[in-house]
Image 1 (cartoon, rainbow, N blue to C red):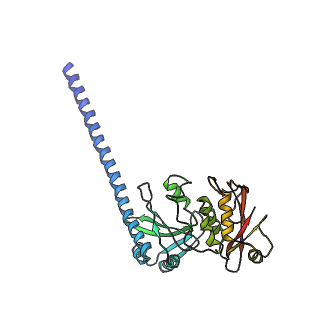
Image 2 (tube, rainbow, N blue to C red):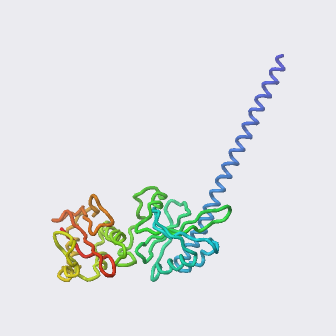
Image 3 (cartoon, rainbow, N blue to C red):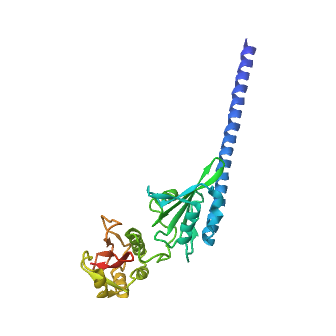
Length: 295
């Protein structure tokens, strides 16, 4: 009886050990397989990133043809919105060429070391300096879905980098490439806000396209802004006053209730005699432009 029980216990221990050993091997293979898949995907994305980088720097977007089938349509729209249109490969290439004239475009390599199917490029000469090329894997092949544009770093991309406030890797070169008069007031706001954030006040000068600016107690509403600008203050003097009024300021930001679509916006953070300054905009024949400031 004792020998029988002893043999039974030995067999049980052997069986438990064997099952445990098999489980360990299985876990190891699974983990190894998972890591291999992750590494393979990153290698594939690095290849796509390198091709997009070459395409935007050389402005030869035909290099991306292999990621779009002949009958495929690609989306073209604003990031983080439902606003988009479908374009053929040839039409989206024309859009990219139109927005890359005389531009130095960069494909940004994020600091996390990981890559995503959303590739950030910046430096485009349209109203929206950020364009994102989106790819996804279908079966075993990578497919180009389309492009979204934004006036600042996309919210999706900021979240990928770790937070909504990750707008910049390094301070941008200001003023940015692109228009000084805009079809839409929203990206014009973004350009002025960005200049103020970095207190790069000289970068405001190109946006005063007429050389003078209105300066008053309130932004003009119904008045003829053209006449007001002609009787205005030279932009150099306005910029000098902003520099003086920002001495020791940590950061100049839009005030509470800020709206991108308004004809003006208040800014705060100034440390001089004027604690709040409004930036005024007006729509002319060529589009929206910065016309002055109000104290």
